[in-house]
Image 1 (cartoon, rainbow, N blue to C red):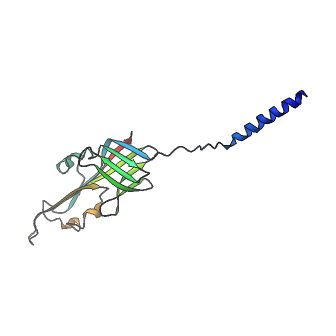
Image 2 (cartoon, rainbow, N blue to C red):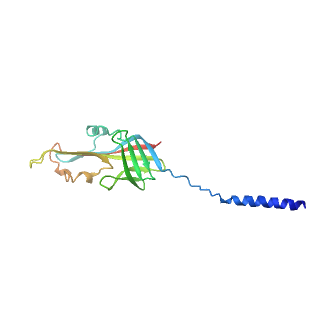
Image 3 (tube, helix red, strand yellow):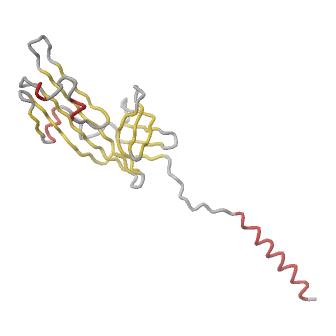
Length: 198
């Protein structure tokens, strides 16, 4: 009789323990969707200068850049917010240079859609190390006046991305051999700005 009393109690405890199996644990970590980065350092990756009269190529020292781009050592944006959920990047300077762009990420490359509605490479996002590398480039071209009536032409631009030989020749000069005046110049420099997550 004593066992009859304990049998229902044991059965109830087994039944109540069996109902706790509905808890599902998800071992995956929660993906971070918004990254805030602060500027840490920069590096001049390449500076190339072609000068007339023969279109000779040189690799000037970093200090040469300050004559063309006085603020190259500091990016325009001290903080960058990368929002993966909304596919956007906010570049914060704390002044009128603040900007927000829609982005697309391909592997680790970050591409923005500028006003021309085409994707444009601006840098690399490393999710593992929570870092962002902003790529900026200086492009400068100067053509001295020619005997055919073409006047002095100077083109200077600082933009996102990287510049290569093909980006520079084909605009004012098709090749370096067309640089026939002593003041003719084609200059570009690629700079990386390194940001670390807060």
